[in-house]
Amino acid sequence: VQGVESGGGLVQAGGSLRVSCVASGSISSILDMGWYRQAPGKQRELVASITITGGRTTYGDSVKGRFPISKDDAETTVYLQMNNVQPEDTAVYYCNAEFLRVVDGRDKYLEAWGQGTLVTVSS
Image (cartoon, rainbow, N blue to C red; front, side, top):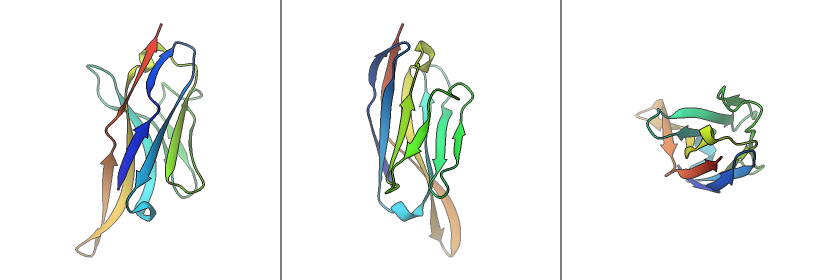
């Protein structure tokens, strides 16, 4: 499983931006997909995630109500709509996919990460 991000860039404070992540590989094994971000000098943190089955969403406290996550019907692309962005949202945004593999007869939960896309918010 792989995820490729797109849509990052420079945006003014208060503006909007949408980033996308296209999954490839064993799509049917993916359990959920999401976005994490890492700002300079800070730890990587959850932004939002969505389950492939059921579409249940989870959000980081700092983006609740601003950054809705969604997926397409083919369940291969996940979108993060970033609204009312602020300078503190500046970070590299990484796509994450959690998927299931059977290894030696046992279920194994694995993660795949994209290369990241930079979002810069100017004040």
